[in-house]
Length: 169
Image 1 (cartoon, rainbow, N blue to C red):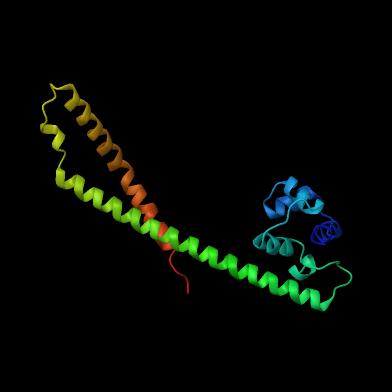
Image 2: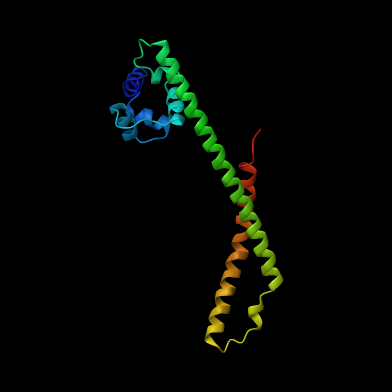
């Protein structure tokens, strides 16, 4: 099955588990678990494995490397196609959520900047003889101080995020 095929193909390429793991950006224990049948790689990882071993995914998923039943291969291929489609839809939805998060973050930063500039540091005119007022002013000043220094970087990051997560045609 899959675990035996991964092991046979890895050995036929002369790769140790460690070398194979480095090619796939996983730890050696992950490769060991795949080869022992204790876990199964996801569809994205199957594609990476097939690329690393220069072997089609259908060979990896087949019963054996030497022989294969066309009906079984067709069924496996159809299942893999469905899985890949589901993964693509999930990836697209995740990208869309992230895109809207960056838009909301940009809007929040812009709105908060406008509010802070409109307020114009009102705590400067407060009576600091009252300890509670002094503490509130210190907190407000600290927030304003940190926000003014972090907001430009956060806004730039959010804009870059918007650009990188936009819908690709």
